[in-house]
Length: 52
Image 1 (cartoon, one colour):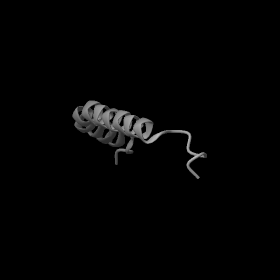
Image 2 (cartoon, one colour):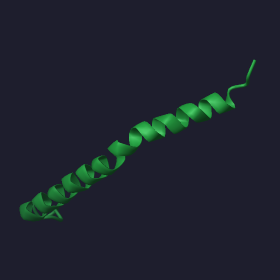
Image 3 (cartoon, helix red, strand yellow):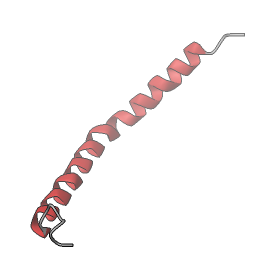
């Protein structure tokens, strides 16, 4: 079973660290833009809504 594993425990730990840092980076980048994105979607919805 251990022969089938492509990564050693050390490599798995490094990969996990990289994935965690990547997630944190993406979250830190996206979070400030969420209200802006929500505002854009809301404005688009209002504009596209047929006026009575």
